[in-house]
Length: 421
Image (tube, rainbow, N blue to C red):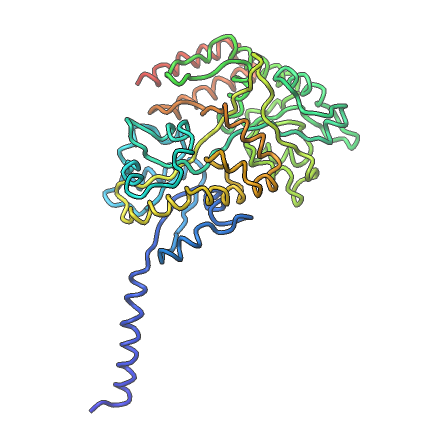
């Protein structure tokens, strides 16, 4: 005989039986990324770009966010396991070299099955940063290209109404922009981040030099590069750049620009909003962003760019779902929305969108800079170690412990074997 208690238990069991499969069938995608990638995909004027995709696919996303190097390290560690727990990995050029290509899917195959719309618009140079032996191991998502940021109020105080037109103008103006303000604030004419090679190489390239050419020739010891380092050393010696500049990280550059303690810096264009943040800056709306000054050869200075891209580990468990999300985030409209969220768009057409132009005062300058931008180095297995070597030698030169020519010659001698290995 069916008792009331048994009936209720049966109903409860029936409800649970229906609920459990629904829960068990929920799709979950795990992504390893930097916090800026999550923000670009989910937060800002462009809204949550993943929302429609999640609803359509009945899927949830777990974001695991880390710092720059930690993101790459986690991605490589997970991809090296027999069975990983990561479905999509954001990887940065230069930190994930060709020796790791076999850990990730060849995305040409997925593109052939379910192609990204207007895929040809993504510049080949960006794809090349994650192309090894013909395989495309990651789809570009974000570029960070440097421009010149300058404080228009400080410029006006020193009689300047426009940014420097050439690299020589920039150096001369930096000297005049090094002064004490009426309130006692010490202003440095130029500051750069020494967290990596990016800002230093902008200056080296503006003088006509370079570190490693695309065909893997080390030329940092050549006259143009040495002249750039010699100029930077003189700026440090005369305190136009702070004498402790080798300790400067991105956070220091942000602080100095927000507080009006520096007149100019070369930083990614997207830092415009940080420098002008009304909650943190003493000069909101006064820090402008333009393309880098013309180089010593009269041509546009090639700004540093870096490219973050989306990869699928070969040991991933949800490859089809992972490609679906990568495809969604790579569409023209999603690229525009991510740009509105602060992303550096890998599709040049995004800069032509009225919404982007209205929100980003630097849109035209960023597009111009991107046309001639270069990576810090080509991809090769020891790229990270080579960059560390050059930073060490640059530091010795700027601090006056080595002659610039000797430092750059030593850098070449130490880097050539790394390139050849």
